[in-house]
Image (cartoon, rainbow, N blue to C red; front, side):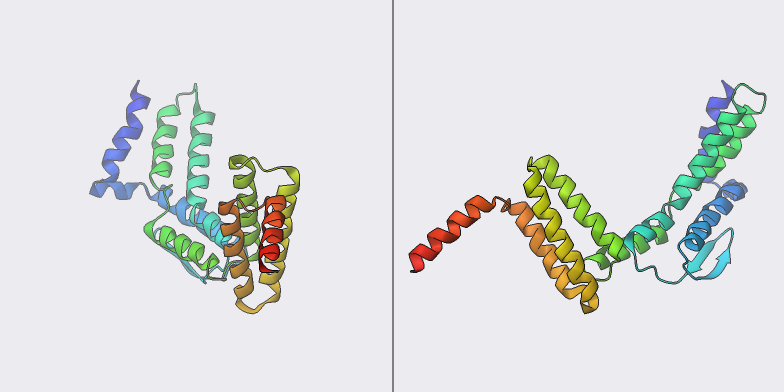
Length: 211
C-alpha cells in the first residue's frame, strides 16, 4: 500500500525546492537527448548533464522529433524496467521512488517543443529532409485510403504524384517546386479529384463547349 503513495509524494516534492533531489531524472533526460543527437550525427556544442544539451540546427523534422521526445521514451522505459525488475521484492518501494524521479523528467522541455515546431513548419517552407516529405506523402495516402475509401488504382495515382513531388523536391533548389506540388497534391486530395473518369468527362465537356 505504501508503494502506491510514493509517486504522488514525489510529484508533490517536485514542485517544491526539494524537487532538485531528483537529479538522476534530469541526468537521463539530457543523456537521452545526447545519445539521439550522436546517433543522427548532429554536432553537439555544449553539454551540461543537469541543465541542457546545445547542438546545431537539425534540418529534419522526424529527427528533431525523436531528439526532443527521447527523454519521454528513455526515462519512462527505464522507470518501467526498474519497477518490473523489483516487483515482488523488498526493493519495490525504492524502485518506485527512483522510477518516479525518472518520470518527472520525462516530459520534453519548452525549448524542445519550440525546436520541434520550428522544424515542423520549416517542412512547409521547403526546408525539410527527404524523409520528412516521404512521411507526409505516406500520411496523406493513409488518410485518404481510410477516409475516402480510395481504390487501389487511386492510391497508385497518389503514390505516383508523391514520387513526382519528391523528385521535384530533390532536384530543385530549396524545394520550391516540391512545396508547390505538395500543396497542389493536398488540395487535390481534399477536393477528392482523383476520380479520373469524372475529370476526363469534365475536360471533354469543356473542350466541346470551347470548340
